[in-house]
Every structure is written in C-alpha cells, then in structure tokens.
Length: 254
Image (tube, rainbow, N blue to C red; front, top):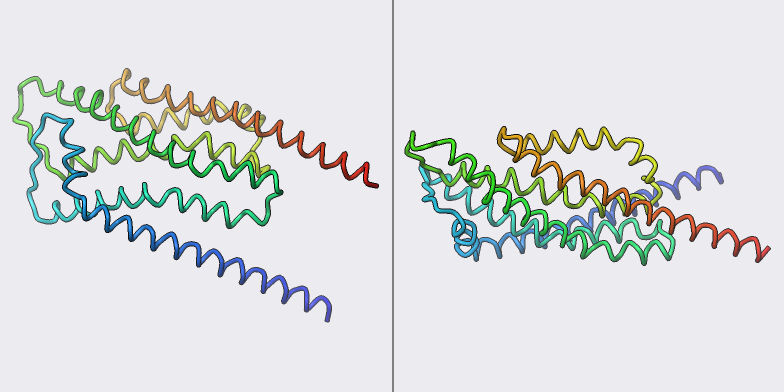
C-alpha cells in the first residue's frame, strides 16, 4: 500500500509540474500574441528602419510577399519582446530545484539574455549591411540590372541576423548550465576543437563564399566560446566554494 501511495504521489507531482509548465507556456504565448499585434501596428516604421540603410529599391512581385513581410516583421518584434518573459518563465519553472544562492545568481541572467539577443541582432545586421551586401553587389560589376524582391531580401537578412542573435546567447547559456552542474569548464576545454569546427561551419553557412567574410564572422563566434569558457570557470569555482561552505556548516552542526 505504501509503495502504491508513493507511485500515486509521484504521478501527482508529475501532473502538477506539467500543469505548471502548460500555464507558463500559455502566459508566454499570450504575451507573444500581444507583441505580435504591436509589431503589426508599427509595421511601417519597422520596415523603413530596415530599408533606410540600403541604397536599393525593393520590389514586391505578389500580394503574398506583402503579407509575408507583415508576419515576418511582427514575428521578429514578438520574439524580441517575449524573450525576457520566456527566460523568466524558464527560471521560475526550475527555481524549486535550485538552492537559494543559485536562485540569486541565475535571476540576473534574465536581462542579460535579452541584451545579448539584441546585441547579436545588431552585430548580424552590421555584418549584413556593411560586409555581405557590398560584397555581393561588387560581384555584379555592371553586368546585370539588379532587382531585389522584398521576400528574398528580408529572408536573406533574417538568415544572417537571427543565427547571430541566438549564438550571442552562448556565454549566458554556458553560465546557466554550469550553475546547474550540467556543464563544466573542463568539458568545454576538452571539446574546444569540435566547438570551433561547428562555429566555423555556421559562419560558412550564413556568409557568402569569401574567406575574409567567413573569418570576420567566425572570429567573434570563437571569442564568444572562449568568453563562455572563462565564465564557466568563474561560476564553477563559486559553485565549488558554496558547496564546501555548505559541507563545512553541516560538519560543524553535527
């Protein structure tokens, strides 16, 4: 009977956790929809913000491209606006499993996640406007009449900027996983060459086939990884120190 009661208690705990996760996802989705609507309202301002930096005339060849722009721009606004809330919901969901000092340490990650995402978008946009587009246009050399469609231009723009925004989260993800004990600096150092290879592949995929451009993209990504290694060392040392203090307190109390 006792064993059956334990099983039922575990099932209840699992149901409670799943119910909490569902509620947090619903709240996040509602905020996403709200920011999506805001993006729709200010779509003209957002669009002109992006096209003011380019000396090109974009063309829409079908009504569906106009609709695509509306949804893409509004979706980007919704993603950026929802990130702080989504980060908080993730933190709040795992908070019961964290020690008090871990809760204090990880709550500060929430604004940093947002700022790093914005920084990645800005860096990716700079690379796209100042490096990638001028390089591609220089290949024309007066041979063709260039016409950019709205669909193709912004698809290419998002393909470059969004991966940068996600990759810029690497240091904070490393710190969070280290604080949870999932990742260690020794593991990152041991697998450094594989990480470098993966980051270089990503740089190749999001840039034209030009060695200089690929180097410009790959170097910051590798630096982000190395920053993550150093931050992981700091968090890991603090974690060990807290653990030793906790063990010493238990020994002294006994």
